[in-house]
Length: 441
Image (cartoon, rainbow, N blue to C red):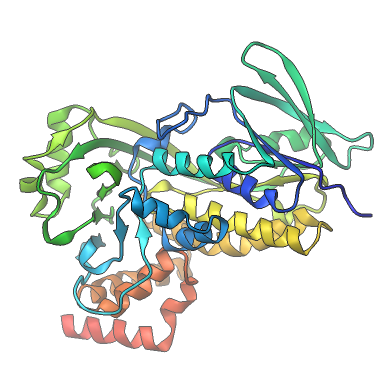
């Protein structure tokens, strides 16, 4: 039996929710996006996105998906002064103590470096221009409305800031409520089992500041990244962003948390940063005080494994899988999920949830496994033989990438979710890793 496509409701107006609304707009007569925050007109921080103050980069897979969903938006970002990073000379990157080769090699597809508030505001502008999408802010979702049989979600109940309750009937409800994942609890209320969940406690803490650099970064750099490694559970990222500003983020695992006083923040930066950076930062104009954000644990909810799931409900973004933000994959995965949703709806409505969760898992799981393997090693947790082997190989790949631009591109394509991790063990890559390590002795 065909289902009506009159009205879809998205819960949450962060990046994942906005992108889901864009995907739904091609198939539904009306789309309503509900959020508890006031949604600002411009690129301002908002309470519901505490991580927005920290360094963000739109990875290449996310760039592709965003361009697919909003043709012409990337050109608008560049016109607004959002830095475009082609890697190579634009990036100073250190993994496992090895600085990646910057010169020579092929030119890669770019990454974009908007601040999170700016990007979210730009996407909101695109959404507001769509005649069949309505943003309704300052409304808290109370729960789902079930059909008489309980086999279908038929809408949501919301309450405005002044206490006015409202029922929103819907043919499809999309949970984009972030890591809290309200659907996880609502399923039990509807008589369904919640999905299996995997949680890895990482206890990551960030501290970030905005700044200006009168002379910019040397040698045309647009980003500096030092990843935590075994024996050094702290790292840093300095990212050029729109408006001539930079975001400097310090990060640490499991109790190694960055300070928030000015002198402590500067001293920690100097200890972690490459040798050239402290001199550059001496001339910095600091625009704010350090802001902290804590990320306690990564979550993966396996909705695709459920035998029973109500029709008329989907889950996207961090509500489906919340990655350690140190790896910068959240926005890219959300954008890929939106493309998947749009394409599946175009192919038909039958078994939408099952088809969507399966297709999304195919993109999520490689990224999730990559992050879990790295985090477990960093935290000193027990690892399987396969994880130990993978970790040893990747460390040797990083070492060889210090002199081999082709390996830099191969690793970048995987870490930015353009290619699957299996591409790193193709014979051509294996040979270069072996040769590079032989040269190192």
